[in-house]
Amino acid sequence: MLNISADATGDEIKHAYRQLARQVHPDMQDTQGTAVLFRQVQEAYEVLSDPIKRSAYDRQRVEAGLSPKSIFQWKMQPSRTALAVSMDEQVVYLLFDISAGQSEEVRGRQTLNICLVLDRSTSMQGSRLEQTKASAQRMIDSLSDDDTLSIVTFSDKAEVVWPSQPLTDPIKTKAKVSAIQASGGTEILQGLLAGLAEIEKRRTQYAVNHLILLTDGQTYGDEERCLSAAEEAARHRIGISAMGIGEDWNDALLDAIASRCGGVSQYIASTGEIQHFLRERLQGLSSVYADNVRLNLRPVNGTRLKSAFKLSPYIERIPLETETLSLGSLQSDSAVSGIIELVVGPHEAGLHRLAQMELVGNIPSRQLYDAMLRQDVTFTFDPNINPNTPAPSHILSALAKVTIFQMQEGALKALEKGDVAGATHRLETMATRLLDMGEHQLARAALLEAGRLARSGNLSPAGRKAIKYGTRSLILASPKER
Image (cartoon, rainbow, N blue to C red; front, side, top):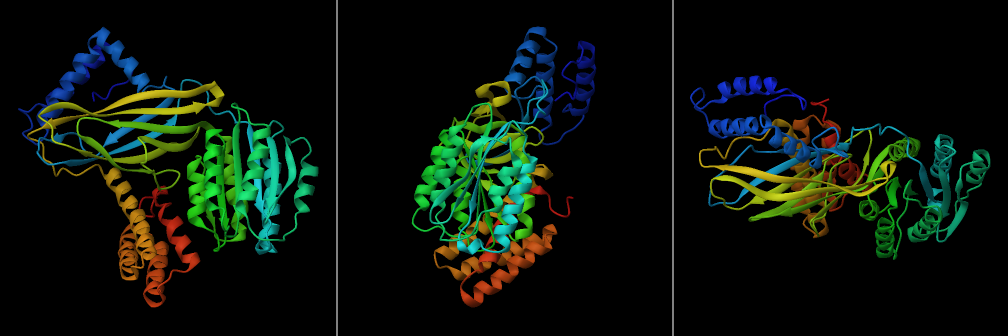
């Protein structure tokens, strides 16, 4: 509020207060919200100029993730500085960013316990399998002696190609990979169960325990058991990342498997991209700072949670079955961000608490489990505030991209219900929005699929995946923002 450093002296606090108080005094500016801002400046000075209150405030900042001494750095920005006194419900958005704590070095590489689960069904025959094997061999070269690796292949049954063990003989391991041959159908459950069993052999709370699944096909009849296996993996702090190659795999299933245990899902359009995605995933796992990161949100006083989305590493709807929002893992060199939509009921003028939030996660490098920070979500209700004041531009930008992602979701749901006209209209509207954002390639893909849908009543498998995975990656920055 006073724009001063955390170790500012008393004289620096007084000087900053006097300058800011003159700028925002109601006698100097007769604008909406000035009185609220002036009161907030006064309250900030009263706290920081009193040694006892300041000490308590510093402790609260550590507990809320707002201090360099915190185990997490946790920033929360609302879409509005204050809310109107109204009998109607109001909507407010909370943009959050969570990053690794800074009180000690957290840049060390994490020890890995990895299982590669590779589809070797007949459909993988040829360049797909050869590229997969070559990429797996390069991944082996990137692992350290402290890491544990296992390799499982599957078709209609699973085979443990390399049992879980420290990587002491990479040449022998790569030779085993070279011998993998394609045959049989696709039963993902067999591969998952065998892979999870290998990870379990050497699972430790001090390592990143993770299964990486690569497949190019549909599994039939075992989808629910695949999801149950993923949920069991999550209970054992094992993550799963799922990568689909080409066009003919079940994106909904792979997304669900990954989301249930804090992993990621990827669309690999061509075999040449397999190595890139495997390398990227390994780098991400090596730099994990915290896993099983989650936000516990408890609305109070007539507030309710309407929606929540992760924004990084990609846009993803967070399920709202409970008040716990699962965020997956947090890397030491990048933040996890998201946006929460709250609907707020009527309140009288004054400061009110709308929700309590808890940030919880496991930090293996510090041997901290269920480490927790707390923040209260409070708002001042002001009868003189303008309810139509726009949100900050970066929040509006994030919401615009989330809206496009929701359009894609809506188009697919409409198509599932047989509403071809509704799905076509949503794709056309989405294409227009994408053009406005400078996303010309993705806009063309949406228009092509809208035309195909209008003519045939169906989307192409490749087009469906290009739109779905393209829209969820928008948050990485549109061309106009790069």
